[in-house]
Image (cartoon, one colour):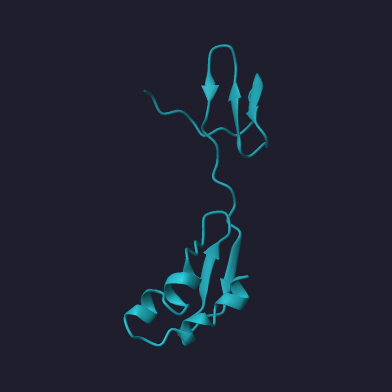
Length: 95
């Protein structure tokens, strides 16, 4: 294995992939899978106690089974005896 210089120009050969930035390049003697990182796409979310900035290309938000376990009668929070009603506030914005 050897380190190579960062790819600046598109080499001759064939493109493997869909886009210029997210594509590999292949020639008869080489497959180049090194590609530059995409420019960040930051977005700031107004939150309390402070705002949060994330990169849309490198961030995921996963919401799993929120309504049944945390926000519904008979769910986990209700089973614990806690008031689940405040947990229902995010449901409408998440839809």
